[in-house]
Image (cartoon, rainbow, N blue to C red; front, top):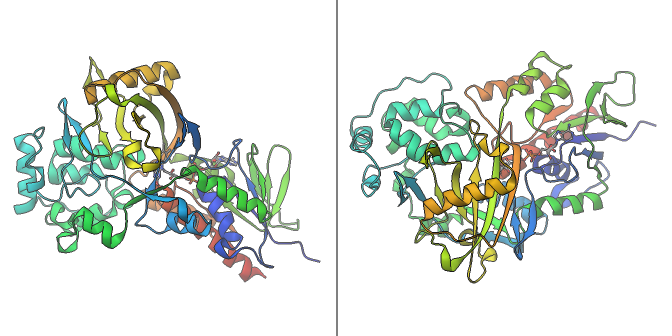
Length: 481
Ligand SMILES: Cc1cc2nc3c(=O)[nH]c(=O)nc-3n(C[C@H](O)[C@H](O)[C@H](O)COP(=O)(O)OP(=O)(O)OC[C@H]3O[C@@H](n4cnc5c(N)ncnc54)[C@H](O)[C@@H]3O)c2cc1C
């Protein structure tokens, strides 16, 4: 009798959990062809950077607090899990930027921070004349730029729109998504629309405008649905619900269990063995949904290109969540948060805070009378200062920075720090080639890569990546039977 098909998934973040969900039939559930699935997670809990917790009388997210809803992946998964009635659209729009010591509302029409008209920037007081000239020039006599292969986002922006707009307005938004620097991040993979616009030539700003001028925010919401969504039980509940239902489906889930090696086993019942500190599991196929350097280490014996995965850097970030008394704290009149450009001077130093999110303006279910729930983001690929501060010192430092930005912020009623030391993979120039080579190296083996290091950072992209890996594995297994 041949052994039952067995798939080992390494990594229990949203990508690995979704891979297991897809392999067990997703919304339809398992059937006779469903393989035995074992999911290994190194830490003591599942979810990776998705985590929700009780804090000051409500469930808050310690990692991502929402997801893009105009991509289908996260919303579809929530529906398949039966969480549809907990989906919550974002409650407000707009944000401010801290420019030259003052808060300014972000102009309308930005695409990942890039302005799409000179007119929209008119009201911004903190911009120099040379930036105003740069945007006028881009609209009327755009600078030429010859691009034949991947380049950094920063090199396109600087050439087309000048340094001030690049670092003071655009980097806080596009760089903030990965806690990275625009001068390192790949235009082709992080901002394909910018890359294609730059390749086509002409005005960058005009090329990024939505076709037909684009609907207003309100009518876009009516036609396309809300841009962002969350779950009233926390984004982390996507992971906890997946865990519950996967266990019901018979998936073997082992937390506090790191995969230590992945070995071909030509003479065994299965083509691979996945080792942990004290076990070895035979696998017909393996999905590696760990950070890229771990996948690189586990597969470096299989192909020379695999070691390159270890060069994919990750930025650490910390989230400091505060509850303030609404009577002694002042927020800007509208908007869901504040962006702070890197290198912003503060008290003979440089600010650590890169953004503030007004959580209870974003999500209705977090609102409480008389309180303000606010989250500060610190940490970038080249700013690790927060890592050497203890929690108390970090809270105090960030509280003082918040007071500068908001003008008034009282003593916090509650505060907590969450650190994500390796949370955000960096897609440097040439990232796509590196990933393609790694995938080609693995093509002869029934081993697939999934997760935020490969197919885009963010929950929808990571879910899509997990599903894709699972579908490929299923096809390989079907072809082998
Ligand atoms: C602070 C922060 C805020 C974010 N905010 C948003 C947001 O608002 N919206 C959004 O869409 N996205 C956001 N993101 C991005 C998004 O959360 C990630 O892209 C996504 O969750 C990554 O999922 P993943 O499964 O690929 O990786 P991870 O969550 O990193 O999971 C990988 C798992 O592999 C495990 N592992 C590592 N080594 C081993 C081993 N040897 N054996 C077994 N297991 C191992 C790890 O412990 C981990 O659990 C944010 C990310 C961070 C860090």
